[in-house]
Length: 278
Image 1 (cartoon, rainbow, N blue to C red):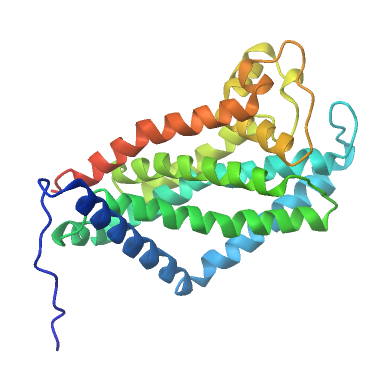
Image 2 (cartoon, rainbow, N blue to C red; image 1 turned 90 degrees about the horizontal axis):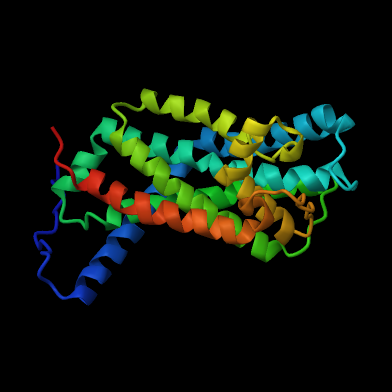
């Protein structure tokens, strides 16, 4: 059997910054390519990416949405679909956590540690792959929305903000995957996504909620993302006079939440990846 020849040049921290950046970018591209290639050997992920948006759209539009009336009138479809798109972006937390935890459990992370790879490039590559995978889900969800009558404007700006939010959420998910003891433990993360998205303005406006629950919903980052993409897709809902700041300024709030997630969980994820394995 032929033994693969591994590179023998190890990069060090005292190399020039430009050299280290090129090293990091190259390793990130390699890791991202690896994850995307694995999609071809896991057709069930592609099926789920198609089936889940379709089921969610049919369930909420035709079953739960039959008696729903958005504030200010208008179509419940236009109210709902941007929220469903935001929900798909938030679900990237669970997806990222599961992929990273599975790599750790199968020894792939240890293999990365044994190679002369950038310790920052690996998590960056994982985040890029998860974001690109999220594009597929968002496009399919948008296609389902178009089929049931959703007619957006400003599509580019809305999708760009969704991808930024998905990318920021993926770093939170990757950190969770690094610190979780096993792949099965990340299933709890998926379960927690449902209350996180239900206590928001995805399905109903928050002003009808009890005071304490409304406070949680208004300051939930998901609500800011939902309100922002509704505005950018041309399906805005007028904020009430007593709306919390994130609901009154959803685009700024979404950018702020995304930046905060990246600043906090980017370094934490890299640090967790660098930590010695036992």
